[in-house]
Figure: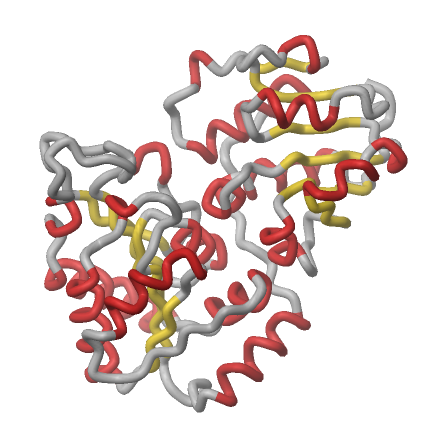
Length: 331
C-alpha cells in the first residue's frame, strides 16, 4: 500500500456494535497515526465521537454524496452487508477492506474470510478483519473518550436535577427491536427502589423514544422519581461517566456504559454472551439460560418469554454491590 493519508471507517449499524468496534478503531489509529480518519455512520450515533481521540470527523450516512469529493485512500467496512460495500464502491477509494460475503467481494480490494471467525466474540471479530491490512494484535483494552463540552452539558443537567451531590445509578431497561432481551420491568423497579433507598441515590434511566412503553411500566412501579434524559449520545455518555454504576440488558446502553469504564452489569438470557461480551474492564455479566435460550430476543417459541424472569433481583443486587464495593475500595 502507498501512504495512507485519509481513511473512512464505515461503522456498524447499532450502538452496541459500534462500542465493540472501538478496539479495532484504536488499532487503526495506532497504525495510521498521522492519517485523517473519518467515521461513516447513522446521524443519531455521530455525537458519541464529538470530541474523539480516535476519529477526526463524523460523516452521517445521509451525506453519502460527499464521500467522493473527500478523496479517501482507504475505506474499512465493519458491517458485512452488500449495501455498506456499495456505499464506498465507485467513490475513488483505492483500498476497500472488509469481510467476504453477501455478494460484495467484487467491490472490495482486501477481503477477510469470515467463515472461520463468524461466531467468535464481536470485538475480536472486528480486530481479526484488520489482519488483511497488516494489523495483527490481541484485542486492546480501551475506554470511550468523554469530551469536555459533553461533560459540561451533562453536569449542568445533573446539577439542575439536584443529582451531582448524590450517588447516581444508571439503568438500561430497554433493547431496540428485541422485547425478549428485556429483563422484567418489576425486577428493574425492585432494584431501583432498593439502591435508591439504601444509598440515598438518584436513578438515571437511559432509553430511546422507542422504549417509552417499557420505561413507563418501570416508572409506574417506583417509589421515587427517576431522571430520564433524552439528550444526544455524547451528553448521555458524559452523564454515564458520572454514575456510580450501571445495570442493563444486552443493549446499546449497556455497551456504552461498559466502554466508558464505570462498573457495568449486563444481563444475558436471550442472547449469546460469548459473542456480545461488554468490553470494559469494570464490566461483568449474569447469564441464565432456559433450554430454548439464545433466540436473540426476537421471537419466543413458547409465546411466554419466560426467560425475562430467570434472573432474580437478589442475585443482581448481590453481584452489583460487590462490583461497586471493589471499585470504592481501590479509590
